[in-house]
Image 1: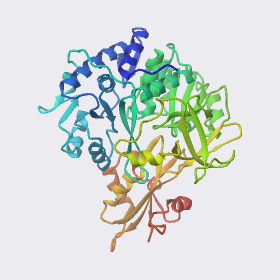
Image 2: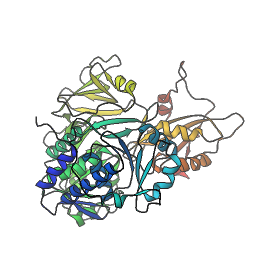
Image 3: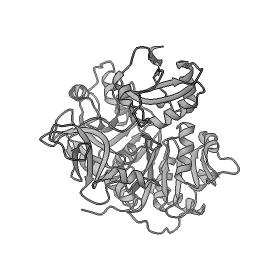
Image 4: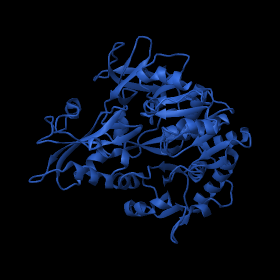
Length: 511
């Protein structure tokens, strides 16, 4: 197997292979792969001029733009570790992430300078601003105009990025991913999807998600293809956008396929240039009808930030309703609570391990305990429940870990609970997911009022809007006299989930 290079070396080679006009259209702004390669050189020199050296971390809070790409690849080229964060994360979560990352420099769009200043710890010494820096800040446009200079080589096995995964029973964990792991995922995606320079990919996902980063941006550059990257998903405009830009393949996740399938039928539904979709999950009851209606073929996958793609279901080897078989790079098993393999067809926890070096994450940043807990018995424990059939097809059932999955976004129950608990009327809180009629889950909270207090669900939700990003704001509020607890005082959330939308539960979408 070919050893993957550093991201900086990979981009230089990909740009040199691509035709001069090939590149990305990001939020309406175009950049060729060759121009991006040159911008990465200038960005790398600019970050070195700030006194940063290989291994230092830099937090990035930016909406998708060509400047965001230049920052990403400039940091990688000089061996700095990027920490991309959701720029509209709630203050509670953002404060934790900025402190935990240990980054001395933050790069952000001008619209986020206020919240960054409010949440940043004293260890942040420099703020680099895109689109309107104040006198004491560094203007990103100046940094990107720095003259290129010779740079030291970057070890492909070194960390390239920290991607924070949603918290389960605690705060989010930062998955450390190497340069070669990023390049390997991009190359695997290209091979799986048969992308070529004739393709034009489309993604609506943000650049703090691995999906957009490695399965769209880097996959397109690897193939010498074009990319259209939008900031938002619009079901009503999706296919018209694909037609207007000549899109041949798109990425999906969460409820996207269900939402598109619920759009009113049009005579030209199948009159589009798209040949393929890549992602998960498309519900089995939607899958075949979606392909027929829109004239596309879907490739389902199973994976995570930590392990990339471990199972895939290309059109050539299908069992609809599953995520396919293990990829050529992983071994997949299902085990019981004692970590013993279970018979085919029996539910259990999905565990995986790589067949080659350089495909998985290198551990959780600053959290060796969590790393060791996940790597039990030489298997990485995903925290997901699934079933392997006798032919090796994996069916994902649900998440054993305490994360809520809403419309393609992972919602940290820890973050929701922290914000809800700040309300003076709340004594205890448990956040959990309930099945959504669209797909995946909606956010629910069960609360016990503080002594002498009364919880107003509508007021509580308004409180949450100020501290949480929009997709994390609870839909359901259930007021209880007490939460179900184990003898060790852990909340038995499975009981709350089993109750579903119980009588008396407040639903903000019913108002």
